[in-house]
Length: 212
Image (tube, rainbow, N blue to C red; front, side):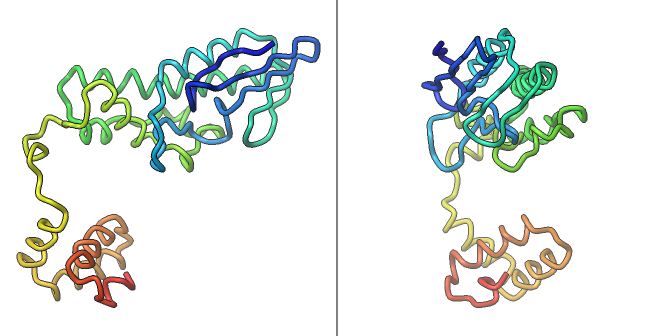
């Protein structure tokens, strides 16, 4: 029996083989936190539609669950537990994001607030190396309110080139390089990346910034 189970894409198709209790679940579950927003550039996923598909799959008496990626899952209770935590994680991201939207928090503020509960975060099927909680929160926010965060500086932002020029002029190239190296030494990798990016946008041939 062919079933429509939209999730990673809207056209996901599952196959239920009742005589063998086998469910082919397409890309709606795999051994990683779901990619609710694909940074490579594809239409964003509908979170609640994905939840409904997982609820549908939970209704089947499945003994063998076969995803399109990662290994099959065996055993009714094991399958039920994995499908349940997967749908709970997606529902949690959606509900908590909406909760904070209704309290007038910005997208960045919500990213800082929303984290999976420990029982979900520790689950082997919810490790963040494909999709992430932060990207998913931003996707959920954008689906309801669009790109504007509510912060006026986002309305007419400086270009990255203009911002880089002003940062280098304000701090000076030598001090910025020094700060970048210090950030790298302290394993503050994101800050090191941002500082070196400012430098490279203005001084694309700077070997020290490139090395960092």
